[in-house]
Image 1 (cartoon, rainbow, N blue to C red):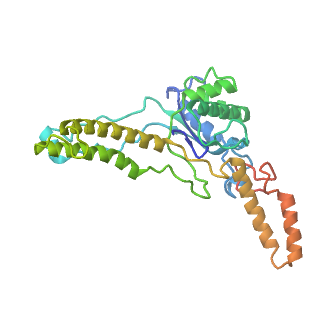
Image 2: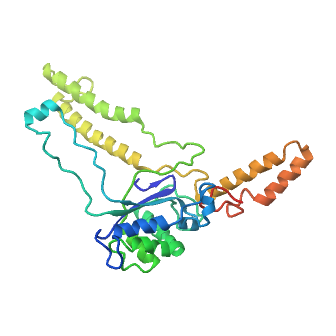
Image 3: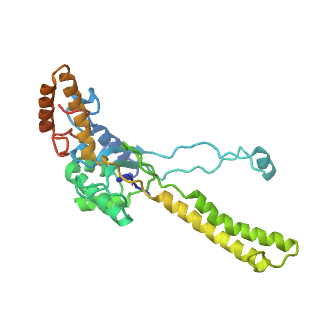
Length: 333
């Protein structure tokens, strides 16, 4: 299913940037203003070097965003001429010196990609599947959350985009972002500790369902060629066997293809600890338990038992709300 997999929404939006001519209020183009706004936005504190900058990414102000990326797309990449067989091109008179049509964008776009928990309430269980309307509500809820937590940064970037002038509320931004929404089938992450059972096809059953009426039709055809008018065992006319067997083969074949496509569109189920609060808690416990392991070397059994009890009381492994690691950082203090 587009946009949804493993309990997450893989959000992709394309917002057209205003004409690249100079902004009348400034001496730069709207595209350049977007780049300046993006460059001014602090990144997440993902390394010791970035931890020194002080300010964290504004996307770290909520607990639904696993990954977020914004960038300017000026145009599509040209991959070169479409290849063609040289002999066929010579016969058809296709001159390789003639320029082929090249796809171009009519303007620059602000692209926003985000991997988010597919929930409308922070910390809610991840869903196994969501219909189109449910997905739309999740996207709207996330957009409203962004507006509540980083309105100033969003205005600085999106004010250079077409149609953003009328946006003045969280609901308005959600509506705007939905207009820019583009379906995607590319997940951005994989947290699985144990791989789920994939949506495997019953190939033997499908082949048998298509193959049996096909064999019946072929048998009717062969017998008819050799002058046999009735099917052995079945007692039906061989011509009717050919006709109805062929019709059944085509009908079941189409049904099998439809089933295979529908089966492939099913989203994978969420992992046991795939939501962002669980991921952050896991990272926090990983670091805390590593320190505990080092500090507890060489102690006797009674002391180790007491220490571990104190560790559980202090760090609360079953409580995702805290203590935990803050979003957007590589480690807790």
